[in-house]
Amino acid sequence: MARAAVLGRLTWRVATVVAARDEGEVARTLVLDVPGWTGHAPGQHVDLRLTAEDGYSAQRSYSIASAPVDGRLELTVQRVADGEVSPYLVEVALPGDSFEVRGPIGGYFVWRGGDPSPVLLIAGGSGIVPLMAMIRTRSANGSRVPFRLLYSTRSPATAIYADELAGADPGLQVAYAYTRHAPPDSPRPPGRLDGALLAEAGWPAELAPACYVCGPTGFVEAMADLLVNQGHAADRIRTERFGGTT
Ligand SMILES: Cc1cc2nc3c(=O)[nH]c(=O)nc-3n(C[C@H](O)[C@H](O)[C@H](O)COP(=O)(O)OP(=O)(O)OC[C@H]3O[C@@H](n4cnc5c(N)ncnc54)[C@H](O)[C@@H]3O)c2cc1C
Image (tube, rainbow, N blue to C red; front, side, top):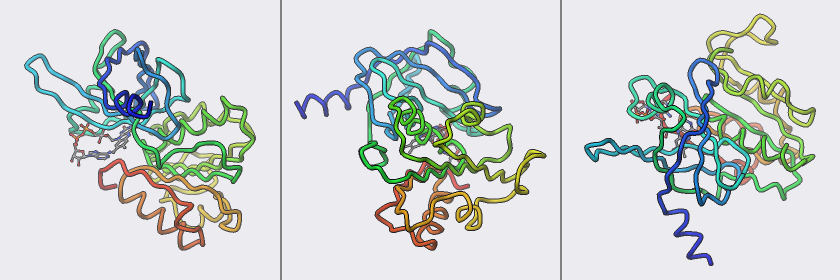
């Protein structure tokens, strides 16, 4: 049984794009039909492989954005300037196109829902994607576990899932750190997500929240340091690094 599950994760499956929608100015969600896909845990990712007609192939990792559903999953990709794979997924891929995925991958950066502790989600840029899967799973399961999200993004135009997050239920509080341009009604001027915002909009360390931090490598390391400096235990902090430098 376990062997079958491992083989399933290692098998490349054909994924067909059935819908696509823009997410702000820099990202796009692809809804994929994947026959044989048997769901995932929120926080997991897939490997995605593109193969050209001449046989050249390129492979990247993408977090799963959707709550678990058999046979279908959603990925949200942010365009990296001069990137090899992400511009294709954001600007070119259309419904009817297909590529390959394998997974789900990862068992550590996962919210399993059995822990009643409050949850603190900290996202930088496209690092919001696996955290959104946790938010959507919480909602789909009718969970009452209180969530707080701190989301660092350059400006309102680069924010992913902004409408969905604005309409979220009272059990989810969202605070933005706009690093370049803040909207006129923002409670704070543009700037990095810092200790003051973490103390104001996160959970106090005494509540021992389960902390999930995801984004570019430098961002994740800075946030993990801030959490530890504010008294959060290292074993309550889970991180996922997407690469890049900012
Ligand atoms: C576990 C995991 C999950 C991921 N999930 C997502 C996701 O849900 N959505 C998403 O958009 N991306 C995600 N990524 C990042 C993704 O795998 C690619 O790295 C990204 O799409 C860039 O690929 P590319 O081929 O366009 O760029 P490349 O051709 O690989 O790189 C081009 C240039 O961009 C730089 N670069 C590479 N990756 C990044 C990055 N993430 N940020 C900034 N600069 C970068 C490179 O150093 C290089 O200079 C994830 C990465 C990991 C490891």
